[in-house]
Length: 308
Image (tube, rainbow, N blue to C red; front, top):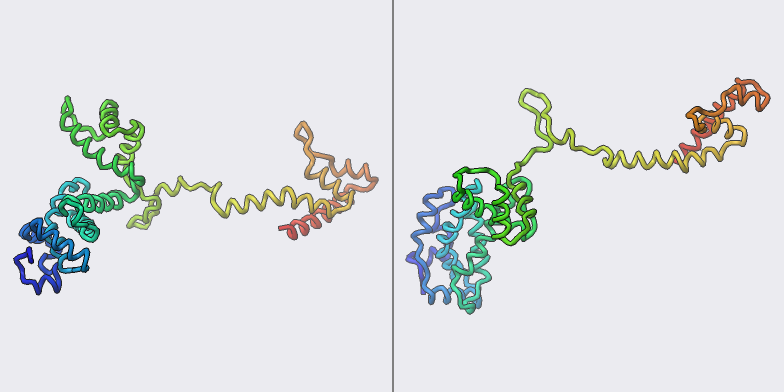
């Protein structure tokens, strides 16, 4: 049994040779519209042959007889600014998935079963390519994305003032939320995503060699940059554990001199003892205190290098 008025040898060898490439869109659409539809008996016979015997010839008949359905469905999504040929291509992928999974014993025609698969592939393609950044990731968001676009067009068409606004009014948001049975906050969030555009974070330099200014110049967070975070942790460790270890390497007098000269801060904001104060306490010259301080600092520097 055959449903196509074409030589069977050609169909078996390469069924797609009967259809011109999508690069010639008008010729492609004209060709698929001339493909004969299968009767219920022919469709079930081909589906059983595919399911039971993995008959690829039968699969080709099922696919090609429904290519016009893909063209019809794809026209509903031309408003997204994506090439019609690409929409048809993705819809054809959905059709082939439907043919592979179709069970003739379900009691439904392939056209009804395939409709879901065709739309699902086209939806996924639109969400991947409509914007550089996906506007919808969850199943609920994807459903809201497509329903919102459709409702917005109908709301604008019946607007009382005849104005065509790019965004919904507060009253329209309430209407959409009620009709789609979602929260108005979800409608507002999706509306904001759809209204926004893609921005290149790091644009290429201009043709004249000048650096292009992009969001990357002011969005970078230096506080959480990995290298800066590692350096910050190392600095904190040196100022606590490292400093404690370096002070413990000094004798009591050298340690007190360093603490008084560099680490002590009084309540009034002033520092510790001066060289002359320490010289008077230890009954030595101020120069000697300075020498002890220099030697202690060198010893601490070596201890900190070992700690790091």
